[in-house]
Image 1 (tube, one colour):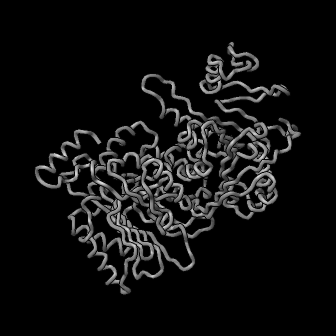
Image 2: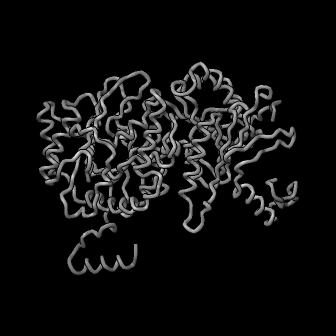
Image 3: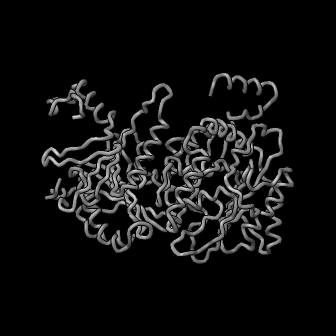
Length: 507
Length: 65
C-alpha cells in the first residue's frame, strides 16, 4: 500500500467517518475459478503460492473459490492452472428449491433484487480496465481473434475425427447453444460454457447447459470488440448463462436463465444481448448449491501458449497441472517423449525456466507444429530493441519413443500425454506400445529421484503395462481427469532405485 | 563443431565448474546458439543425424533399430 493512499484514507476517516472503499485499495473479491477437473488441489496450491489466499474446493467439481483484494486481479489472471474466472455475487450452500416449477422460478426472479451486486460490479469494472490494457497490447499477439479464426479453419481440415473439446470450448464463446449430439466418439457436449460444469455425468444426474436465448449463428464478434470505451455512459448489455446439474430440479437451465435474466433486466434496466454483451451473469446450480457470479474472462485461458493446434492438443491448464504434480526443481531435465504439438514442454519452459525441457515425437507433423509453437513463444519474447529473442530452455527432436537418444538415468522427469486409442493409434497398438514406452522411459529416468507424470485414457492397458514394470516404476498418485469428455487418468510414478540394464542398443 | 572455431576444448578441463570463461562458452553453445541446418554426429559410431529447420531427426532406420 502506498503511503499516499493511507494518508488519504486517514483523512477520509477523520472527516466523514468510514471512507468509501477506494477502488482497488480495500475492495475485496471472492473469485471463482474453473480448473481442469481433478486438479482442484493443484490449483489451490498455486493460488496459495502466488496470491497467499486459501481456497475452498467446491463440491461442484472443477471449481475453486478464494478471496483476494481486488488490486490483485492482474496476478489472478496470471494463474496457470485456471481456465476461467468469475467474481462471486453470492453463494448459497443449501438453497431450497420449491418443488413446483413456477414457484421455483419465481424465487429465482425475486432473488435478483436481494443480491449484493455493488462490490462485485466494481470488481467487474476494475477487471474491464485491465482487459482494455491487455487488448491494446495484444494487437500483435498471436492470440488475437483474427488468428483464432485461422486456427479454427486449420483444425477443421482434419476431418470427422477432429471432434474434440477444443471445438466445443471455442464455440462456447459463440452464444449459440450447442445441442447434445451423442454421436460415436464425440465428447459430451460442453454446451455454451467452456467450463467443466457438465462433464461428470453420474447415472442419476441430469444436466443441461443452455444460454438464455438461442442466438443467431453469427459468430466471431467478441464482447471485447464491442467495448468502445465509453462504458460508463451507455446502457450496459448483458446475458445470463446458467449451468444446472442435479436430478431434483423442476426447471431447466434454459428456463432459469430466461427468468433470472428477465429479473436482471428489470432491476438494472440493462439490455439483453447474446453476442455483444458487457456483463455475463453466471447462474451456477449444482444440486442445492447455487452460485451467482459475473464472468471475468471471456476467452478461456487454457489455449494461451498454443497457436498451432493438432487434433489432440492438450489444454495448457492441464499441462500445467501435470507438471506441478511432479514438483520440478531448478536444473531438472524434463522430457516429453510424445509431445505432439508441444503443449506440455512449452508450458514447462514458460513456468519453470530453470529446468531444461526436451520435447520429441516421431511424427513429422507434430514436430513441425511444436516447432512453430515454440517460434511463436520466442516471437512473443522478442524485445523491442533487437530482433533476437531471449532463449527458451526448450528443444525439440524427432525421435522414436522406443529408442530414445538419451543416456540411461540422465532425465529427472518424464511427462507426457500418452496416445489414447481413440484419437491416435489404436487400442491394439497400445497393448504393445505402453509396456515398451514405460521400459524406455524407465531407462532414461534417474533411479530413485526420477518421476513420471503420464496422462492416458486407456487405463486398463496402462495398469497392465505398469504391472509388468513394477521393478522400475511404482505408482505414487492418480488424478482422475476429464479430457475432451473422455474420462482419463493422470498417473504420478516414482522411479525405483533399481538401475536399468544398459541397453545393447544402437546408442 | 559449429562450422566455425568454437573455442571449446575437446574435453571439459578439470575443475571446470570454477572456470567462468569455459562455463560462459558452454552456456553460449548450449543455450544461445540454435543449429538450424546441420547434423549431429555420434562420437562412437560416426552416424550422422541431420538437422533441418532446427529439428534433429534421430529416428533409426529399419536396420539400425
